[in-house]
Image 1: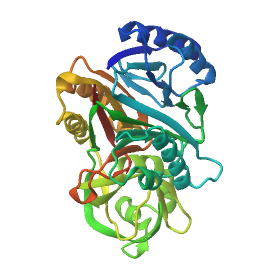
Image 2: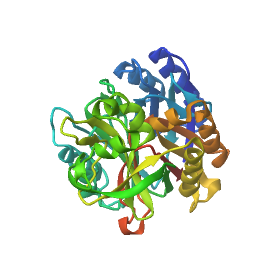
Image 3: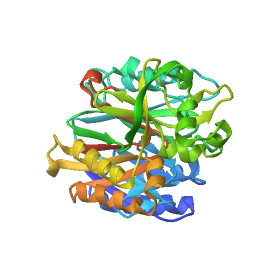
Length: 388
């Protein structure tokens, strides 16, 4: 496997596509590329940008998305574009697909449709791992697990901001999509490792969810769900609502699963005292308020990169993909650049680093009882290291 990365800080999308493509081709050191992974900062990127990129790199599959900011060797970019060209050898395989997911379409059915398309591209080949991206605000994981397998390893992210109406673009081949879910499966002579961590710590006593439906929690310990925040902040519902974004980022709810906590952001305080979250919280779940600090957040970054590489030959790692919660960026503030420095120092110097900030992250669980089940996380950094 050969890798070539191009980065442009140009604010004009077409110029960014041109500059990054030229640079990636120069750095590839191979006659041709088989795949392009593209991340760009939110803005006016469109199908025209993809056409410019394709005019330079040739008629090859493109996979990627737009987001709040991108991660690269330069650090954190709030405008611009990054392209990673990949040249594969015999025995290294991938397939890309997309499925429409908007307009009231059942999210589980959309995920199953995507999975079926991906599987159809891998007849008689054992699937190794997947990358999933979506601009939707609904948890698709059950539909993916139904077709791909409950313990099938997946990473990726949710690109839409719950508090903002606009959606970021998704790139699947030459399609520039919205209201969709896209995916890529990998297989063959490729080794990989995945690490994920968040760094938020539990507050107060454990409590049990006594009434919920999917991502809406009605009661905790038999009381309206909002009470857990009212008690801690000594505020009424309107006060919680006024500070919702800050509370959602700094004080998410944590679902206790074995030795780890799966975080959930609040997306809405409802009139009946229930709370809507980014991701489902089943009845019977034991939950706690969580709090994050800059130090614990950075330690989680170290943990995630170490986990991703622990069973790999470091000399053979080709690239490291990062899906990092925008909540972590907000919590870290001016220290966010230190997180990227930790990532860069934590991976081999020859390996390429690229990533994007997300509003929900996909990664497997580590608990033994969950056997590596991939789920939607919040406030988390998800790291994929790939050798080839």
